Image 1 (cartoon, rainbow, N blue to C red):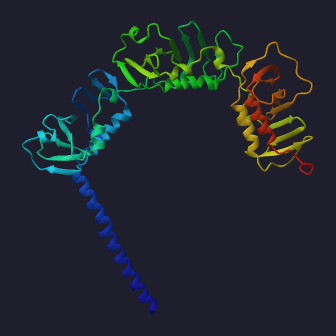
Image 2: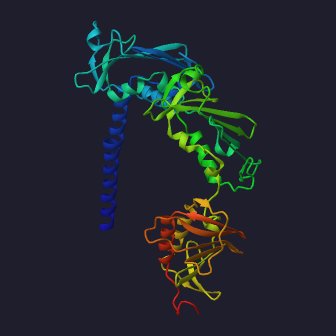
Image 3: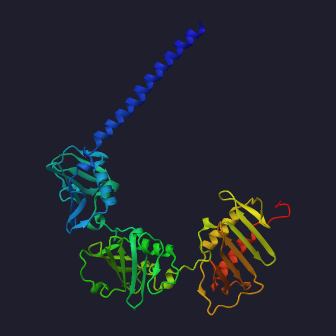
Length: 458
């Protein structure tokens, strides 16, 4: 009969556990949620707000309206910064009372509410509601607040008050452009000094061509980097609310003009000035997709190509890392040959036969990473003869053929003089100069790859 007693004890335990969970956990949570809900200043959701005004001391009021999207209507028509506005709306609907100061107060002046520092008005349905923020409390960690038409005075935390205190420059959209890099068909960069760089690509192609230098191989990653730098531009400050006074801001003529032609034949334009001051790190700018004149970091000037050589593909590898299936090299008397096996694995190779796996296959990947980031400085012209006994040589195959071969002279001991490298890509040969440090790093990476022993190959 002991099993019957065990069942009874189990039932009692379950009932006690259920009672505890219901009254001590669920009910407690419901009570806490009810208290939190009661402390909320407004009982509404953000999508119920149809319009908003923010009035602050010593600052023009900002009026926003929502139709299909939120827009700034006053003091100037402008698009909004969606993230900033979302923060304002979330703060407003989630605003809670830190503490009630007075259920009613005839004199609002001691709280700074007679002439509030910030008045936030918002419309829901047919009515407007006004939230007033006054002075900070003595501890400087909260603001006195009240809702117009209600007698109660309460505190809201400092973070909430600061989040609601937004002006035109805080709320307006700061991104100059809304295009995507893959939509661009043509990039033209024209400098005031007369240089113009133009690259374009046919629809559906990833291969860019330089106008007037179609034989030059363009590195797509360099063009995309330029486009991304333009796409990400955001105003630091607004110099003019309208696109006026270009000459007074050094934009007529500009230092550089950038034009982008998109797939829909739309043309996007960017104007940039000289540095705003002798020691300034800012430039004035005007973009065709934003009203006004703004200030930007001057680093954008260094991101734009000054000549076609800045976009030229000077990579040493000449193929994608994931395309490489074999690597063969010799440096002095040391020789090695590896072939790709399963994913991220490499095998020794000798006399056409594959041997065991490398224990540190990542060393081959390190070589490919180094080459992917390496570019030559310049071509050597006229091209010197290939040395009969070169110091180093490295060849790279895809699955069908040898694609790239590097042959180089011995670097100087101090690794300061650029190294001459004979670069053969897809059957075309040229001589180039490469930074000595780059070649020294490549040699170290290659020499770190183990070579096959006599027992490694069957």
